Figure 1: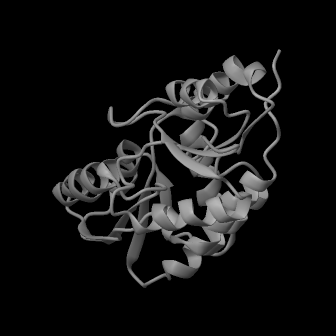
Figure 2 (figure 1 turned 45 degrees about the horizontal axis):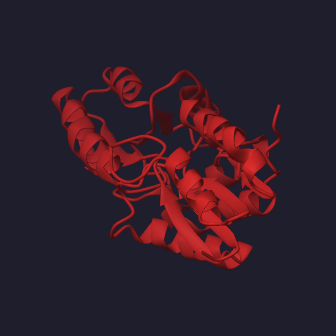
Length: 239
């Protein structure tokens, strides 16, 4: 195996036929000069090898330098588990680095808010609802992103976990809603849980729902942010 490996880690269900993820993988590979690109699972459906398995495999095959870039949008449980997996094996590598998640700083929030503002322009009488993953850390990051959008004058945009979106929108029967996933990949979770199931729940609450079937990885500004994080990734420290 070649000397420098890029591991794309995260929910991989959207990668087959997902143009956004494909563009992200190509751009990351070129930017960091990886010789080999592998994929690893950190959660979601049981498809593909888990991150610890991938790291063990590449090390057994002689790899001593690797960068792991996740498709996580915030520093939640899965990102913490990825950090733990790298720490467990870091002493067996000469260099092992982990890129931070998408929303790692106030500057990141501003970049993503600006990109969403541009691609989802406001329309009178319409609410834009973007659904992300559940979890305390994730929901806190989504709230900060919503605040960043509000600061741009976009008080028509809600960014939250699915159940919380239903509760927040339930009091607006008859209102038009544009529903989309706040996820890196347009995979099973985005297509089934958000664009089908969540849409049905909102329509059952009396809302007029249209969908925005796109992933964050389709946005050039988001891909550039992921690349910047990868290039600035710090080596994993043990202890």
